[in-house]
Length: 476
Image (cartoon, rainbow, N blue to C red; front, side):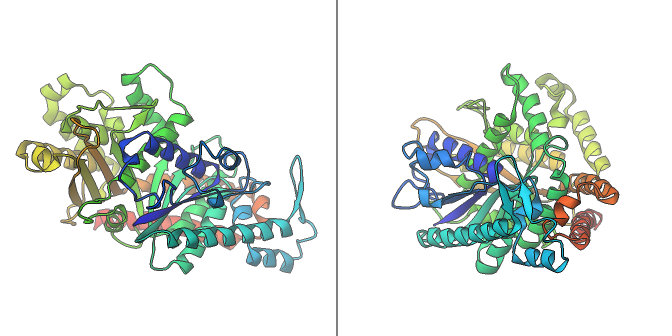
């Protein structure tokens, strides 16, 4: 049994390598075969980039990267210019260019070291997609019980967003019975590339159409959260490597929730249940413990209360900013009231929440403990504000698994949240992209690769519909 992990672009591959590194250092390395081939330590993964910087060392250093099949490492030379249109470019787009008589004017894309024609880019894109599909089929054949495909990609660049959108579309046609999950990274709100809001607009609309579920992470928000939480634990500045470390540990814990003993629950089952309709696919993930500065944010003997608070703090760290034990003891009722009012004022609500608790004695120490369960129920209602119309809005799952370290009851929690928090994220993307679109800024970079006004208009409509669908569920 297992899942195929497809990693696209610099961001997708860095996150996958970070996750593999954390797995190899953890107890998950033994026993759990969900991400690996049964007969070996090779991961069910394909790594793809249009530049060699990240992936070439994997091919060259086989000792360090022995857990990755070199045949599944596909890299090229020219990049995709941080442009969704260039990453997505296919024969249909090329035909549009020829029909519009623009081919001669834009036949060459220039960089500092090479000149690559539209024809070459188009041919290479077709080759990349074909290779990915072929390697995916071979990897699936090596899996006894194949369950799903998860694609890690940035929404902002050219390879992850553009080529990623293209591959997910192809997969939806070829692997129609397979759950397609996208792990999408929203970029920093400013500073990465002038095209990032266009790219995020186009890729968000595309994955909404073709993916079955979308797990998303916001770089900006994770940085802010880690800076706040990290400052309580260690005197170090948070940077992008820590953001990747955090996302990698969340993904590791996500893949670790599979119940390999009773075969009762797998992570894609929870994803399917979390996506309550076709219009509500965006899921946030928090987990505890997580890794920060190469160490667990919680001690090995942490209590359930500490673990639960850690998960809640990641989701709503703004509400925990001035929190301390004394304040909790003196004014918990007041704090709870203010938090609920704050959530309702912002209009935030949770449509569906799936939370998994795992330890050696989880049934005895948590599920069968009235005090712990009342504490958990109170905190979930307080922080997540589940919608009242859905009696199944909150689902708790408990998995007993014997610890691989004798004498240590390794507690773990992963929570998947489908909530209205996605609305302001998409609203901000649409707002900035539309301001640029209305003024005609940078659009020539997309026209030259066959995109048209209707592609952008359709994407704007798609993101607006997502927001409307989420708002409707809250007002229902």
